[in-house]
Length: 129
Image (cartoon, rainbow, N blue to C red):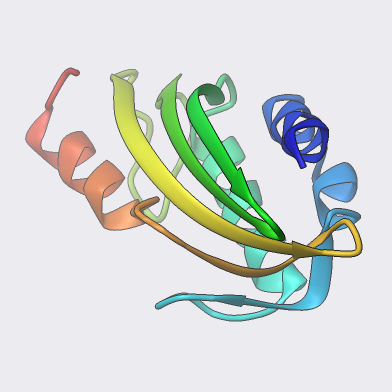
């Protein structure tokens, strides 16, 4: 599972949406977010459009059976339009916590603290972190 997550994070950091899609179940469920791999990929595409240099760094990874608990730091510079907000050139840095259930090498369930609202608030407030 640790190797699986390293592959997933590497695909995310390369912004390789097809590689990420290959690691998602087509019907993946996400807490409080639209379900399905298409929705997941669409959300990432929006993020990468607004933050072309967006990267995640693993802080901690816990594995138990088919479940992962992950603490990440994510950051990027807002140089493109993101969810209707024009580029501000602000650099954002956020903590993320994610819980993944992986079956046959694909995410089938996810919940976590990755929050688009938090990013938009930082952009609108001009917060630098």
